[in-house]
Each structure stands twice: as C-alpha cells, then as structure tokens.
Length: 367
Image (cartoon, rainbow, N blue to C red; front, side):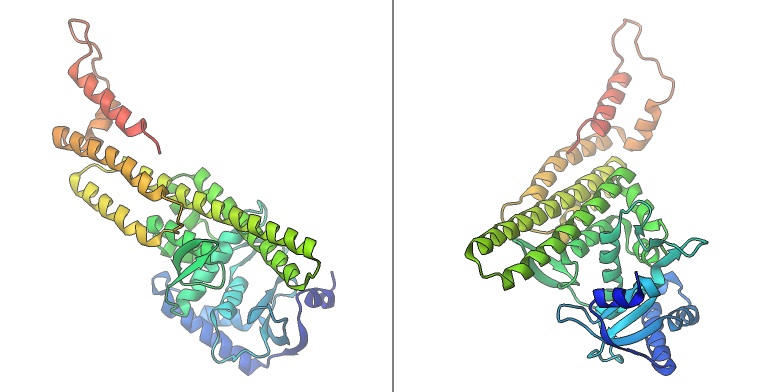
C-alpha cells in the first residue's frame, strides 16, 4: 500500500511538515509531562526527548469526526490537526504520541507488539487503547466525570474516548495498583498482565482482554451504523438501522456487565481465599464497600449486591474458623502434612473433621 493512498485512507490532506524547532518543543513538552505524571517509573526525560524528537511530525487537514492527532504506523509519523494549538497538547494528541513510544519491533523491523497489544495473538488491541487513554489522561490531570452510555452510568476520566473500557480497567487496577499498567503500556512488558493474573488467573485475564476487543468492535460497528442513519432517507432502511443500532447497544451493555462481573467475582474470591486474620478480613470488607465507587451501574443490574451477599456468608464462616482455631493458613498448611486419619475406635478423628471442613470452606463455594 503506497503512503499516499494510506494517508488518503486516514482522511489526511494538506500535509505540512513541522520544523525542527517545533518538533523539539513538542518532544520537550511531552517528555516533561510523562516524567512528572509517572514519577515512580523513574523515566529518563532526556531519553524520552531524544526518542520523541525522532518522530516525523506534520500538520494536516482532517475529517470532522477525526481526533486532534493521528499516528500512522505505515510511515512512523504523527499528524496533528491543523487547527490544534501545538503549545497546548490535548489528551488525544498525547495518546497518539504514546503509541509511537509503545512500538516493539523484531530484528526485521516488523511491528510485533504495541504496549499491551500482541500482534501475534491479535489479543489486547482494545485494552491497550484504553490503557493508553488512561496514561494520556493522567498526564493531563483529567478529572473523573459521571457519564451515561447505553443505560450504563459510571465515573471515568475519559468521557469521550473508550469510556467503558477505561472504567473497566480502573476496576482491574483496584487489584493490581496502577504502576504495573503504566509500565506495561509504555514498554510493552507483561507486568500488568502478570499482576492481574496473580490476582485471579491467566485465563481470566485473557477472557477479559478478549471482551475488551469485542466491545471495541461493537462500538466501531455502532459508529458506522449511526453515520449511515444520518444520511439515510428511505423509511424501511431507517427502521432497520434503528433496530441494528439498538441491538448493538444491548450487546455492548451485556458484555460490559459480564466483564465487570468477571473482574470483581474472580479477584475478590481469590483475595478471600488468602485471608488469614481478622484484621485482614476487616480490610477486605472495607474493600468490598470501596469498590462500589468503580462500578458500572444499570437500573436492572444487581449483580454486585448479590455477590456481596453471597461472599459475606463465606466471610462470616472464615471469621468463625479464625476465632475457633487461629490463623486459617496455618491450619490449611497442616492439612497437607502426614496425619492419622482414623482414630483407635475406627471413627473419623476430630482433627480430620476440622481439616475437612476447612478444605471444603476454602475450595468448595464459588460464585
């Protein structure tokens, strides 16, 4: 594919190259903001400046529905909207600059990874877009807003771009912290994936990443259908488009809620299994309440309340075990040691009964 055709396909016209002074100013601005926003990553501002200053930068006339910038992988260049104030980079422009920093190529120069997106498996495109948006929003100190999409209400620092995906990632960060995500997003490492997998499992992470991709595909299709609706004047086709649009919205809602349920049920269950003291349980109960702030809410969805009601039963059971026998971890570890199973009168010993009840408690009940 020729570069001219590629740029035309991206809707870019009237292209003008920025001079070295402008490029250096942008590189200095972004590298400084990255280092200030992510101090715990110990980023090198000089290295970032050198890397960003090598990026080909242009201004261009863009279509009305385009963002303020577009990074084109085909020629490793970034195009800023000709109407953008380059002295005041907005979140979408920084987002596109981060895409350039994310690139990982093989020895032949082929792009193999982009932040959290593995091009070999084709999994992680959407979760990487949302993660990149969160990093860009953090750099710009964006405040969270209450938004409603498709009957879903939630808080997000990115109300216009990937809002649902960003809200879901914030739920994942509740169990991992944010540094692992920022590091993986910038450098294409598996730190965040490993951290979240430790909070639940590798299989769950893959399921969630795949759900993100489904959400992004549905949102893309929805945008296309909405554009068709704006220009369609045949009543039968308008009716069909309305039906298709409503179907897309329902699918987005269902996947978002199912993904949310998967995150909190898997991670809280895993966390509960590791609690060994009353102090840890008290903290766990506070976390259940704190998590409510991150929820994507809908009028007909009571999944989280139902989950909390179920898990409180197990919490109370674990409290009883701890009060009666001490640290559950110590007892469960003792279960794996060599112990007599049958008493002298051929009845199950009290110790075996204890171990059996604890094992059933820890491994038996699932949400």
